[in-house]
Length: 319
Length: 319
Image (tube, rainbow over all chains, first blue to last red; front, side, top):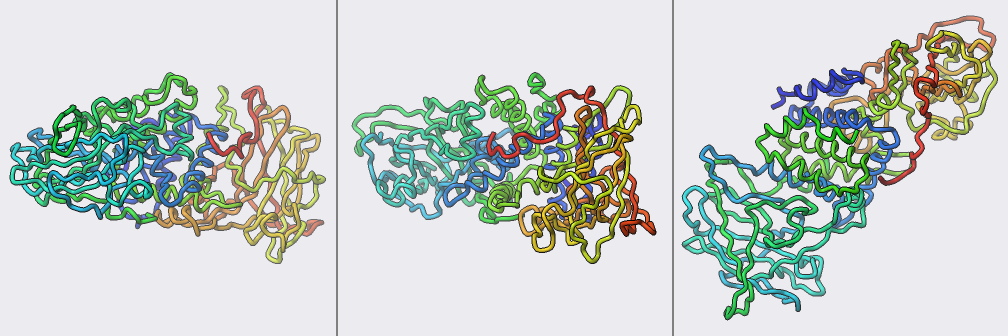
């Protein structure tokens, strides 16, 4: 990969520029020979795109200073449970793009597993297993709509149900809050649960119809949204992380197909095959008023033997 | 300018990509119709280059998280007299590039004024005027080399000296510190002075041969330098800001032509026409042991009527 350090599209642009055509290569060339190849590759591309951006818009000094101050403000807004750089990336579509880059699996036969989308910051490693048919609603809000959620986890290639796959789900309550940020109203692990599929790959449980919520707009990410004339709303969603030892896992968010924010999700994480159709039901033994069916397609690990689910270095704080 | 929102080089890249070819345009398209044209232009280009960067290097999630943490760390390192985002830009060559973008003046006749380079953070609006022939060395360090600096400020087109032009200069002492950061050893305005050219455009004064120094490497900008295997040194330099009401001003740094760091300046601000040749002299009435001659070429304001010297919004903290 490092060998493609020159990239022809930008090279051409540079040469036709009215500015010093050698400057960007000069800066890249300052890297020492012993720089690690992956660092060199990433930083070369970063420098090239950063310079091309400046030249393309002919950034003024005033605008550059605004940018410098903006970058400083991101880290200044950082605090526990508020990762502002992460949020800015989300607003710019970067988390969603990186998710696609890392999880897109194109098989030669055109077999398509269920799409992946961003994990988000609220997954918990401590979510308990619950029995099939159990409810993850430990605290029922007055405006909650109890939903019977069911489906099959299938092999994307054969269509056969996968026994023993784990459907790990989590969602916010109707006030837009996850259990950890709402201890007054929610028990720990409210609206979280892991369910293991039966011999036919089936799983079923009770949850809430999810509710849309707005991201916090008080910091630099909110300023960026305002500048772009964008709203801060995320479509309602239920998170899922589906795993099985023999299959490539899928992490995604599932959205009601009638949500008003599907097209304009503030973090750009909606995909066509992640929509849910909530249907009214009557006489459910647990009192559910809605029913939703969603099947998950997993791809065998033979297509990506080194796949792993989580981010090993998520807490690393430097290069 | 906003009309060129599509940029063919990146457009082609997008379409040939193995990733969703519509994603970047989707994110750009979230901007509201009432977004200001310049904001739209800058953010469209920024989003496009940021996404192209991620796709080009196929950024992993771990690497993205490292980047998120790095961006947060920049603002966390910010304090009075430590603008870490500015430093990171300098290391990546961005300040120098933005300076070129804003000050490159190409005349039809190929007349070239003296190159501009970065202002840096140490210019002072309070520097006093001094008489021609005066010394700006208020505190002579033991290892200082007193230098007679002289030259002519000329019209770049006619070659004629310009009367009444101002040569505003500032430099660090031999310990690498500017007056404001070194009150124990330096009086206020030590090594700073403004000199007004005589009727022939000539100016002359005494200063020190400048000394190279290293930028502070204790923060994220230093981490970035280490990652790239780069040293933190700036070549020795004397700053100048040259102005006259009828001419386009020039801000630059002048470097001894025998400095070891010219090629690898950590902030990438050296240009070929900004080099100084220090020559030994004897019997100078003020005791100078070195002589340097440097002429400055200014271009008439008729070539850029709206030119201005300083950054009006330098203290603005948001978009």
